[in-house]
Length: 244
Image (cartoon, rainbow, N blue to C red; front, side, top):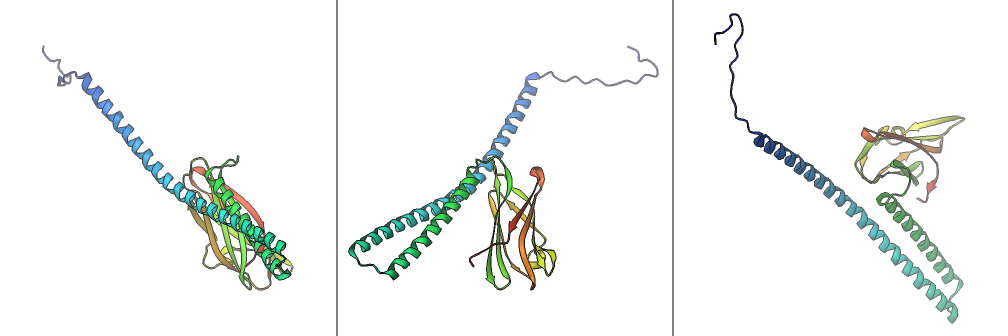
């Protein structure tokens, strides 16, 4: 056929029609994506199980210590009963046994608290999920020197990493004025915002040096989680020192 003058001509290429080949390529792509997804899931599960096993082991150790304390208390009670019956106990021995018994009871209370903590992290049954400011412990290490330990936890069904920063400030009285001191002002080893990153829990520890003439009243903690689970929490702790 004669070409039309002035029109652009295109070369035509004939390719074989192979619909089965396209279907096979598509199926191979689907299988590859499924395999990649399964492999990613397995890696995540293995890492999560390893951390969970470590927490469960520590919880079981605490349970063992709790059981040993209970057995010791039972033995001591029996010994007291035997001594009373035999008339072989005096006031001093009674006081020593009573003090030891009270000490063991306190240890049991602490161990029960630790077990409850691990149960709460591993098997959460509370309505509030996400980052939590769990507790703050303060104890005196020397005059005007205060050791602190802040515990952050994450309550979740699936424990992915939570990260962000936490700000700690000490509120108190300086003379007749109320004053707030940033963490960096009382602990030179820390910045105003301490970074955190964890799956289950994290302790932030340090030592404060309280300035002369400053009377602490409370500690303010502000935690800010970043990323997809962004969350901001505030909690005020009264200034209360544990035995140090």
